[in-house]
Amino acid sequence: MSSTEHLAYIVESADEATTARTAQRLAQCAGLQYASITLHGDLGAGKTTWVRYLLRALGVAGRIKSPTYAVLESYEAPAAPHWPQGLAVSHFDFYRFTDPREWIDAGFRELFAAPGLKLVEWPEKAQGTLPTPDLSLHLQALPDDHRRMTFQSHTKAGAALLQRLKEAPLAAP
Ligand SMILES: Nc1ncnc2c1ncn2[C@@H]1O[C@H](COP(=O)(O)OP(=O)(O)O)[C@@H](O)[C@H]1O
Ligand SMILES: [Mg+2]
Figure 1 (cartoon, rainbow, N blue to C red):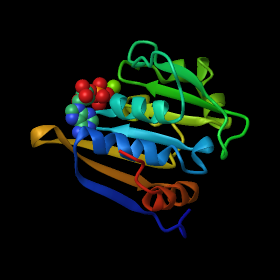
Figure 2: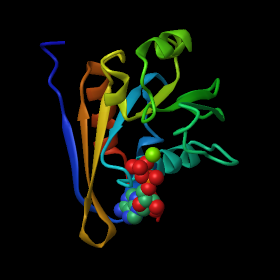
Figure 3: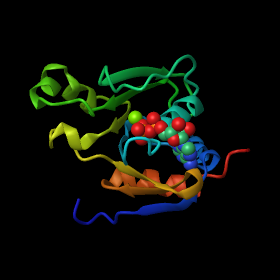
């Protein structure tokens, strides 16, 4: 990967509607069906909220639970032009995760190797057992319920996806 030029995309100050719009824009991007995205930030920074906006934008209906207790919640988004077979989404939260062997036993390694979108809260708690993500998103709380959003690519596929996000038009408000 050393020759890959990595990208960053920073939204300096996003209110919740703007946070939602970045998720809606990403939901239109080809390559999402193979991507893994880690989410970083303090409790309450908005990681789960952003995932909910993304899942809704992908057409997932019904309740979207935080996976804090279950570690993993799985979804199947309906077919769309970029994923005509539908899109499997795995939403992880490793906040309560202690034993990396659990990870292997639970078959998460296979899940990461399979196609589908992987969204990971608290990857730090998985203690280096996770593959390099394609993208990371850091959320930082600012005054007045705003957030600084920092997207960074870590793989070639992630750089391509982030370039598409930068170019994605703003969804209708
Ligand atoms: N600009 C914003 N972007 C995202 N969430 C926001 C924003 N402003 C306020 N919020 C609120 O902050 C809370 C974030 O909670 P949550 O997504 O569960 O955090 P985390 O998963 O990072 O612990 C939600 O209640 C959300 O409505
Ligand atoms: Mg959360």
